[in-house]
Image 1 (spheres, one colour):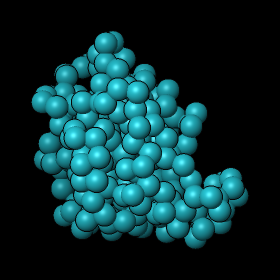
Image 2 (cartoon, helix red, strand yellow):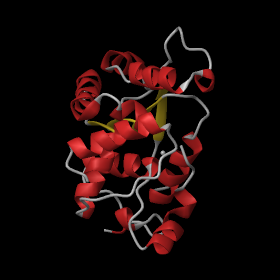
Image 3 (spheres, helix red, strand yellow):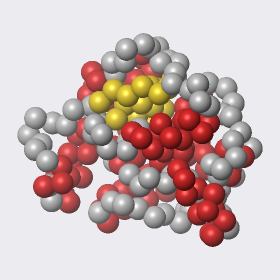
Amino acid sequence: MIGLLYPTRDCGEDDFLACARKLDPDLTVDFAYVPWGANIGRVDDLDPVEKHEAVRELGAPERLAAAARFGTTPDVVSWACSSCSFTRGLAGARDQASVLSERLGVPARSTSLAYLTALAHLGTKRVALASVYHHDTTATFVDFLAEAGIDTALHTTPLLEDLETALGKPVLTATAVTLWDALHALGAPPVRRGLGKLFSR
């Protein structure tokens, strides 16, 4: 079972479940939710600076550890939020994973760390970044990738192969890399057609 810590209920879980079903119909994915800070109303009502700070606060390792409650202890856990896992930098992302691993006693990852693992797996050193974030938050992700030596909630699972065909390059999405990396941490992720180059080797 893969345990996913998630920031907002009913906001993209179906894409993870669709990808998991394509990987293995018997693969179980369970979600636990990290609550936003008490002073946060609707995230969409925040200005870009407030939103960036709220996202950073949400990714505080102690908040993740407190929220990591699953019905059954998963075999691997991942903090499945791109922005919340890169706004603290590479060391911060590693701290998040370390705290979760200690809390649950299983391998722990995050979407941002999953990107790095997937890029290394594909031998990729340069990326073109398409971002759904405000330019300040996108710049933070660019800094995160640069820190790792490399010069997001879109429903993309059904489009991966078409995107790769059109671009002639591997396409890595938050959903795909999060699940691929969680399975990679348990051994070897399954090879599946229709999910892009990452799942083809």
